[in-house]
Length: 111
Length: 114
Image 1 (cartoon, helix red, strand yellow):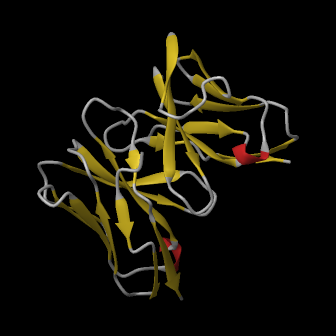
Image 2 (cartoon, chains in turn blue, cyan):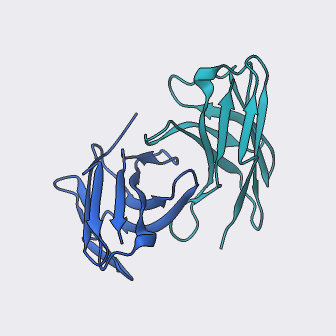
């Protein structure tokens, strides 16, 4: 079953602007991960944040995690046309090994 | 880094026929592989987990007889969609257990049943 909800479901911004996507989840987690999917392709792992971490950076990416609110956000700074893709949060909790994905945010960067 | 090779990338088959999708771990051994399904403009849903040397574990609501999963070796897992129907048309993606960070995904298979 779907674990998380992302918002917004779709986001269109101008190149150079920052893009923020949010994700909420329902159960306890070991970590939360963000993935990017270009149209019709596989998923690329972007960043993983553990349940005992609150913020993590990787290049132009910044992820936050609030376990009390069961939510996470992904910030992409200085967006580029190549960032156009769908972004999914995913969680792996308890004894399960497979990932439970959120519904995703479709990001469009206008040149 | 870890690479998972998935084939075919696209397949069109006639209703009633079976289709096999392969996922290979190229530079590592995987005792487990995860299979997901994705409908257009929707998220990924975990279908089942293949386990080398034992039966696959299916998620609730996934038909075991329709989606046959076999973990033939430490580098190969296959998903066979049997007696395919148009409603089985979807994007199927495999994934290997996590390395240092996230999971490694195959490039996906677009199945169209006509």
